[in-house]
Image (cartoon, rainbow, N blue to C red; front, top):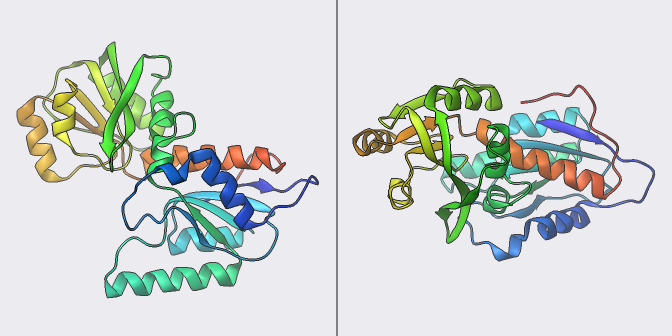
Length: 263
């Protein structure tokens, strides 16, 4: 969890109003998403919001860190409604109780935050890799919408791309598959993406994502595709961070502190 900052003197806003601003920025209503996503305000309170924070996951650790940092509006990518087993329902109930006890409102955005053309995860990772100026097209369809992007006409050494991904995420990237040493057609979809049918149809030689299952690893090798994995969480920090900064600026919150806690 990372804190953005405390509110300045201009105006007041509550959690529901802030959630509406987020939905407007992300065009949330235009997206279909997976049942567990439940995009929008998932936990609320009646107070004015003074501090915004962000985390990739609305897990108990992030909620408690938000409470410790006096964050009262937490923006996340993976909310509290994923999963329906007895265990998962008990975990969800505990997270909700803890968020309410600490006064932490939780706003979650899944596919809308992946896909946003300026603030999203995929464009954020693209820029972090130094490919922001490359000609790009939509790629990586999920629930009927492209949530990633592809770049063509480039010429990158595989090892350089891997090193850049490691620097962008702070985690050593893993290279699987069996593609060329020079990457010319690259697809980027953050989180977990393993739809190699789409990769092949797009004519890509390299896929950068967070994680993929074992069958995808085997197929990538046989198909001659580079599969570069940077970590599910690590490739999805960009959207929540960018949205938090954007919404804080809109409602006159103060600047981000130079030092903050991260989980």
